[in-house]
Length: 384
Ligand SMILES: *Cc1c(COP(=O)(O)O)cnc(C)c1O
Image (cartoon, helix red, strand yellow):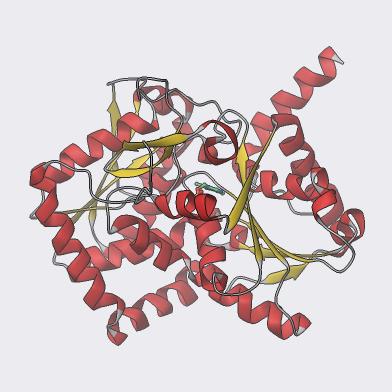
């Protein structure tokens, strides 16, 4: 594909076109509706635990050689930023008169966050999950069931996240009257990427205000890990017009923007995807489940093409060092996803100088990852 590309779009079968237009209209009016926004802010405050702190990480700062602040999304209910989006979308579904929500999930984190919001708001919830992932993530499947959701294993394709999204889109097309599809990142056909960005932008709005209060100046750098890109965009977007450098950190094995991706279409939108020369999606193998998606949201493709943000990727070893460093230096065990953002500070110090002021999105907590990390460390100790 050559020339100017318009990332995003609505590459869907006709049956989904009208519902997407209806969703866009509903979102446009609700995003300006004070009663909707008021109800959402109240839930974010009393239920999800917002505003999350902006924490000055002093020992990490010393290690890195400049001031580093962590935006503590790991302290949100259910342990990550995902609840910001699922509360927003489930509330929107209710306002649209829907009684049922569906979601896709890879490792189960977005499924758990959706099941949580659905339970809170009294919505029926069905979660599509690749059959491989159902086997690997038995505990999260049980969590979703405890929360009242039904988990449907998807046996098509590679039996992972990409196939779960396809199945969720099929369910949505068949049950439009009753059902809203709660997509888990800034991906999918328009208006999903903009809507999810707007729900996650609470991260950057709070952080911008908090850093101004703490330091009297804007950060020089914002750093976040990128799977689909929702925690990164949530932090970046409210500072888009500010002179702040944006750094997106991908995982080796799913280095869509930093290395291997080419523009293409999947799941209803145009963006960079990891694909073979025939446009078929190539399976990814990121160490962190939340970063294990073969594409990115269209706004990140746009940021990449225009140079507004820069993208890097970290090896599993580098991410694990980020994980261990934050635990040892700050007493915070990060999600493996977020450990990529921390690892970037350690392995790209040449990008920073003593006057740099860095805000890192700590997208989630690491309880879910400790047994995986234990396995990795034991393996590498055994070999080395
Ligand atoms: C899902 C997840 C991610 C990746 O998703 P984005 O849409 O890129 O933010 C990152 N961190 C954590 C903790 C997650 O659960």
